[in-house]
Image (cartoon, rainbow, N blue to C red; front, side):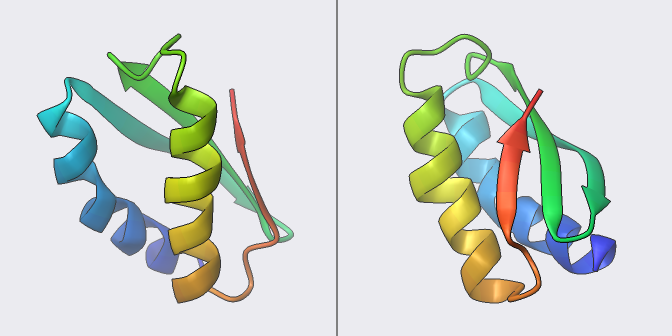
Amino acid sequence: MREKVEAVLDQLRPALQADGGDVQLVDVREGVVTVRLTGACDGCAMATMTLRHGIERMLKEQVPEVKEVVAV
């Protein structure tokens, strides 16, 4: 499952990097994906929306085993 999650994150990275940010995969355990938002995304007021409506939505659509995405 980790490889599938990483593949989806690779699809999302160009959009994040275009705004000066990025996402790093920290862990995948029991359907919970842990990521770290970096660069401009770290501390951005829109980071929660990016996480929930962007990253989590895409992961759940493309990797049905994903239950939740959390940021550290």
